[in-house]
Amino acid sequence: MGNVTRLDYCQYLLSTPINYTLTHFADHSERFSHDMINRYMAGDHITPHLVGEKVSPYLIPSEQGYVIFDDTVLDKRYSFNIALVRRQYSGNAHGVIKGIGVVTCV
View (cartoon, rainbow, N blue to C red):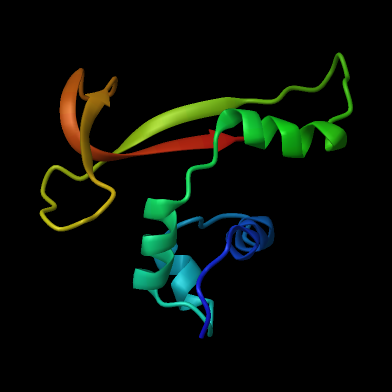
């Protein structure tokens, strides 16, 4: 079993239309455990510039089209050992909570 790569993770994201969790990825992968994927995610930093650089050749400008980014915080206030949980502001909770920050691009 090798390490998870950015290509592996991107292929997973392209192949799943609904569930993007690490658990789902691990459950549907014969090569990677949840811990392996979690270690990869903790160490890889995909910047907005890198995303823009990679996707811009595939974007076709249109007056009827939109690219939408939305951020949310998954509430994990009752968790104690999840590596990605951080204290961060949640607009939904109107304060700082323990959670996982997620950005979605449509």
